[in-house]
Image 1: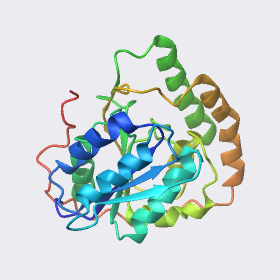
Image 2: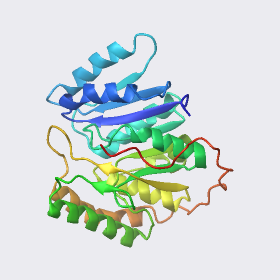
Image 3: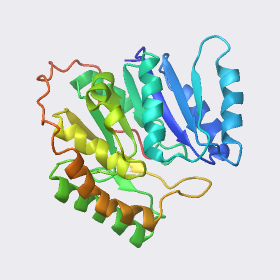
Image 4: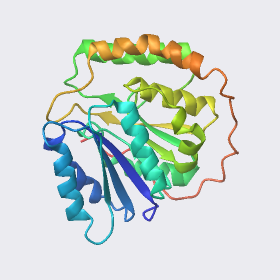
Amino acid sequence: MHLAALAVVLPTYNEADNLEELIETLFSLPLKNLRLVIVDDHSPDGTGALADKLAQRYNQVQTRISVIHRPQKGGLGTAYVAGFQRALSDGADFVVQMDADFSHSPTYILQMIGVVFATGMDVVIGSRYVPGGSLDETWSWWRSLLSKWANIYCRTVLKIRVRDMTAGFKLWQRSALQDIKLHTIRSNGYIFQVEMAYLSEKLGFHIIELPIHFEDRRVGQSKMNVSVKLESVWRVWELLWRHRKRVSGVREPLTQPRPIMNSGRPAPHR
């Protein structure tokens, strides 16, 4: 597990205040073959330049950080697709997607990769809405209600079982991303998370939701707002129509779990 070829994809836009500490935290994990793919959308605060500087620091012996510079703010969905494609072309066997603002604690990655090695799951979702999952205490009741309602709405319309449809913290096996056919993904906002979760279940992937504590960002401003979430309401129906011909698949039966982990419980929240 600790030698796994694992890539973490980090889309960034104005994350200069978080990026260096996040990279240091990720590289402190006991994962010898961990690599990062940073996808920066021409951040006005200089995030892209900082990413290049950090890449020079960490790439002296071997390439550990790849930086993709995009000419303008192109959207979360296309940023992730570009990062996934780079990670796969670089030979990653496992790919993690996560926010760059510490909303997703890097320590959970160890539990995620442990779950995959122990069970053979195709996708591990860092979930706020399964038993043991939780939201930051500073979230307003309105923000929390809107998030929970969005998940219930998406699950009802798409008729799937994933509890945290809008989760942005996931670990993918290489074969899962290849089977999704990334070139078919059209969502370019936060509905991207819903589309990927929907296809994962529709195509018969083995999915598990790992409870996490979702923290509010430490510094900077959230890119999520009410208008973005409301836009997702009608786009869910678009997903249903666009993928109507994708055949529901059945993955190969899971192999006998290997005794890799001592515990399946997540790390302490704080």
